[in-house]
Length: 224
Image (cartoon, rainbow, N blue to C red):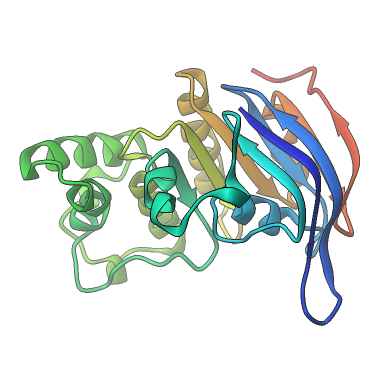
């Protein structure tokens, strides 16, 4: 489904976020990107999402070269993606339910369908009882679960999650990982970046990045 062909990403100050990365991620995999902060995990996810373009090399999604996509095509690409990115905040002037409904309203779904599917997404993450609350009334862990519900409500083909368990206590982190695993088991490809190694054995595969390079990769023998 996703192929990186000798991808490098550099910036004007000659900082290299990725260096000659080549990898393949298959349809329906649950892949963890591991490594320390600054290893290139977030950049790799942003390139898949079309938020960044590689400086060299190619990234293929179902055979389509993302670097050659016109700007007008990016919204259609992102409809296939569920993005859980750092700093992607909730709208504070809307209820939890309205936040989760928003992606469906944007693509033209009816209010009743958006309401039904948003409620189902919140229920999966044990957040339906907070549907009418303001995001300001939620804890950090609860806000993260709402952000995940918003990312999955459109039933994406691919979920990209950047440090989804960062700053969460263990109970909330387990809820988040179990929710992502449930979607992977239903056929959704999930790519999760994390510097926390406690959940790596939940993945079908782990790709370890260091200083922008793939330094190791292995299949988890304990993956569920």
